[in-house]
Length: 123
Image (cartoon, rainbow, N blue to C red; front, side, top):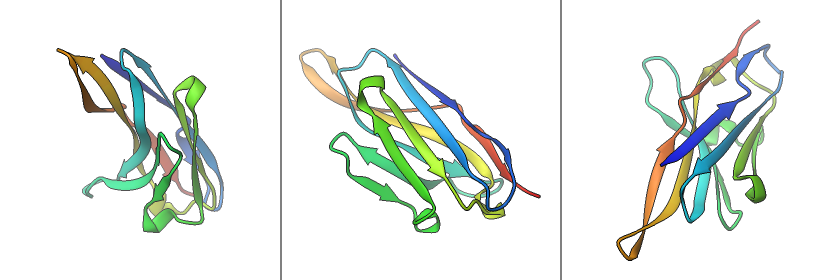
C-alpha cells in the first residue's frame, strides 16, 4: 500500500505563485517517477510536469517556462513551483507516483494517485 499526500493548493490571483507538495509513503522498493497532472471541469486530465528517479523532467506545453518541478529523494517528496499563474491554470491538481514493488519473486511498477488539491486562479 502506498499513500500519496498533497498540499499547497488554494486561491491565488493572476500572476501570483503557489507551491504544491506531494509526499509518498508506505511499502515500496523505490520511486520510479513522480509528477503532477491536472483536470479542469469538463476537461480531460492533462500532464503538468513529471520528474524521474534519474532527475529528468517533462512539462506540458501550457506550463513550460512558468512551472518548475523538483524532487527531494530523501523525503520521497516532489514539489511543483507555479509562477505567473493564469486563470486557465485553474484545476484540480493530482499527484502521481510510480513505484517499484516486490512480490512473488519479482518487481512490479505501479501507479498511485493523490486525492487532488484545488488550485484556483482568479481576481
